[in-house]
Image (cartoon, rainbow, N blue to C red):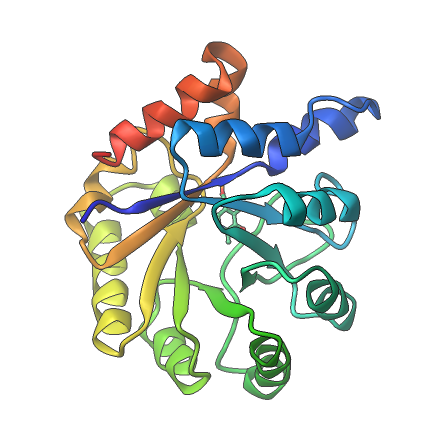
Length: 235
Ligand code: PXP
């Protein structure tokens, strides 16, 4: 089976927020992504609202026909928002206000109790929870302890230096998670070029990709950019 593609439409909103206009609209991008064959729409509602706004998520909840995956910090504010909007999946991510993008995965080893409270509340509302973690075996066993059905491996280090060793690190983490009965997704910094070597890791069932698709869309159109990524995934 070929991996699923979640298209992250955050940076459509980045372009809109840069000018405070009403366009381009991430909701329109989500429609286009689904029409092109995307399996999931992913958005990150950041604490500073630098791109996606609360209203975007509310409208997407009404319009997404595939799966809506909300990336968010494990904070009380975000938990309340997720319980209200009910995305299909929540991916818990670490967040620092000053970072340019999500740097590093969530530390599930030190924060297990706080994470467990958020995971339990989401699970109780019927929302599947994924944890965005580094490809580190200690994080995989901590995720196992938290009984999540899915994890997303942070591919940022791999994207910075796509070496065979970096692929191996991701492979070991993906195999460990899969052996533990946890479904494996991956994402961050992936492009049509650097995603290809990862297809040798069949345990990775889903990719969440945003920046490179939106960047390509500016030049070749959103439909073509999503289809190009699907083709890179062998779809
Ligand atoms: N997955 C997660 C958990 C993320 O935080 C991000 C970035 O928001 C992505 C995937 C997409 O990363 P990129 O925009 O670099 O493709």
